[in-house]
Image (cartoon, rainbow, N blue to C red):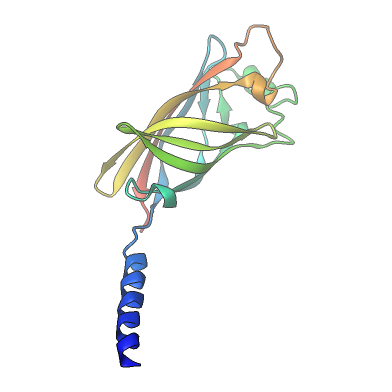
Amino acid sequence: MKKVFFPLLAVVLLVSSAFMSVTSAVDWKITDDYSIKFTSADPSGIFKTFTGSIKFDAADLAGSKFDLKIPVSSISTGNGMQNKKALTAEWFDATKNPNITFVSTKIEKSGESYMITGKLKIKGISKDYKIPFDFKKVGESGKFSGKFNVKRSDFKIGHAGGDVPDIMKIEFSVAVDKKQ
């Protein structure tokens, strides 16, 4: 019995120590120093409010997760009438769909940068999106940044043609601090 027990005990200890040594993604707190911009020929602007949870560690991409939210009502184009129109049923339908959300499903290394795949939900419509981003860590802080395009017709925002282009360019810069 002793001959079987000690090798079995050694295997159990080795396997359990391997599980304990796995890194876990770091919880990051979004600071007030963020920028979510959208640009086109017209309109262009920012979203003033941005919240969510971020777990990210370059050494543990499988354990990393983004769950982000932008209240549509925080849109700011620099034109009060455009802001109000953006909230209507034709555009973002803010009464029925008050938030733009993004929830990651996978994060991969892409050269010196990263690629995040997830569900982007706008105006009640969810689409799979891949978003490239960079992450720069400095001590207990960091910054996520990137650019991508959103095709507004994919989300039935506005109507085809007219003065507003179908492709909206999104640029983000999100400063974070390590949660304590």
